[in-house]
Amino acid sequence: MIDINLIINSPDIISAKLANRGYSLDITKITKLHDERKSLIKIKESIAASKNKLNDKFKDAKSEDDKNSIKTESQKLEKSILENKKLLEEKEQVLNDILLEIPNIPSDDSPVGKDESFNKIIKTHGSSKKSAIEHSSLLSKNGLLDFELGASLTKTRFVVMKGKIAKLHRALITFMLNTHTEKNDYVEFNVPYIVNKESLMGTGQLPKFEEDLFKIHDTELYLIPTAEVPLTNIYRNKIINESDLPLKLVAHTPCFRSEAGSYGKDTKGIIRQHQFEKIELVQIVKPEMADQTLELITSHAEGIMEMLEIPYQRVHLSTGDLGFSSSKTNDIEAWFPSQNTYREISSCSSFTDFQSRRLNIKFKEMDSKKKSYVYTLNGSGLAVGRTLAALIENHTDGDIINIPSVLQNLTGFKTIKL
Image 1 (cartoon, rainbow, N blue to C red):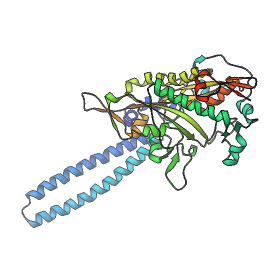
Image 2: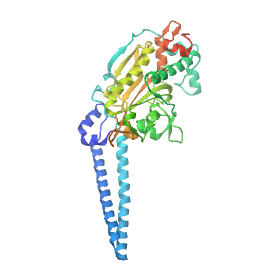
Image 3: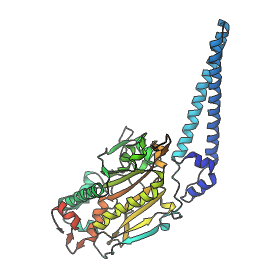
Image 4: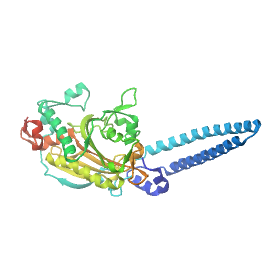
């Protein structure tokens, strides 16, 4: 969440920045609650001071009448303390609920615009192949991708892979994990695929985006939408030594998303499924390292694309297209010849201290007792299903899919005949 002191001390600046991403900040309501909370804290301190004075008087009291009188007065103060505590907790809860609904502040260098049409293309890599057949059409005829079976087992937008395509999918996972752990120095984690409400609150998926999640009936547990959630929550309520930063984490997990409101959008083939696999990169860093780290994470994701010889472009998202928790995002978009366009395959974001404030993750500065909030960043390295689709479309020649050389020792074959 946003530091409330930024809102109170610089209301016009913060309001303007949030307006750039289409959010209207109710400064009056927040300021009123903040002032009421401060007043209740002052009352609390005043009552506590009176209670201490009564305790001193009780020690010096000689007669039973004086002691009884002090006890009666003390009981009244205790009642006031309880009433004040209840009011303070109520105000803090209301204020906290409002803060949890406010998106992150866009970075100063994010392009200002109301939607994705204002995104800025930073670079392109690779030559764009033309007129390929759509990946699902290529693979459905021989059952390597079976959407009808997926729908019969579950519902639409689930798929069953088999044979060499299933093995190619597995090879991509291993290749990505090996690259990030052996070349890019991430530590691999195996994390739960089910998380609690607190974990999703901490990374910003709740309370705002509950309709996008798969919730387990009669519980406060959810299937993960991304490994970002369990990976970042590993350090919830932790104080990290400055010397241990940066922390670099990676995990492969399935991801589960209801994709509410996305009907008809990129739903053909395996571009947008309810269940998909992803390699997630997370870094936890000192604030001054955020920009450098975002560039590093983005380059790690791009490196996978380049080794797989998939054309792509890097896009700097506008303020109106940023995710709720993000301050700055680079999308990597793969070229899909069948659609004659680029589609997102990775999103790399800096969250500043937005998540760490919700999760209470701090670092202790060396040679100092000072504790500060860390900055968190993450990126897909990469979304496996979309990578598979892009690879197929860009590496198909006639009735042959050519396997990139970096995968051949993992697949055990160099081509797939259609």
